[in-house]
Image 1 (tube, rainbow, N blue to C red):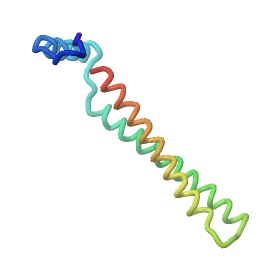
Image 2 (cartoon, helix red, strand yellow):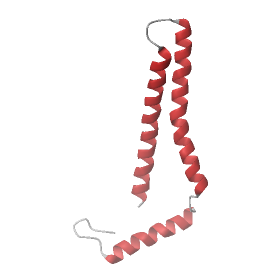
Image 3 (cartoon, rainbow, N blue to C red):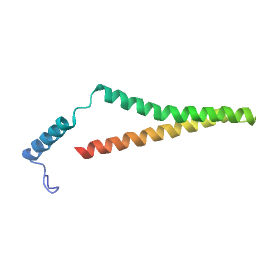
Image 4 (tube, helix red, strand yellow):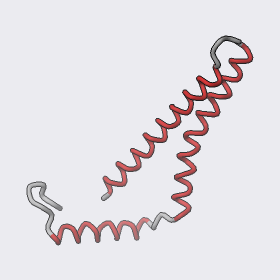
Length: 101
């Protein structure tokens, strides 16, 4: 709608907002449960790799006793991996949300 060489006119702004509102009505509003589900999904994407790393670390510590703790190292590695996964997912959702606008 808007030519990149000129600032948006009032008609462009109003048209964009009206199109967004119509699309939201057509697709249905995302309520509280959607937000809670999203938070749960992000939480699980961090928790699962963290717990998996800790479990593998405990197993390795029971099999191979050494100076360093496999549990702590793999717990931290799982936490980092989970946080990177959550960050990637949130960034993807943010891009899609801004692309729709």
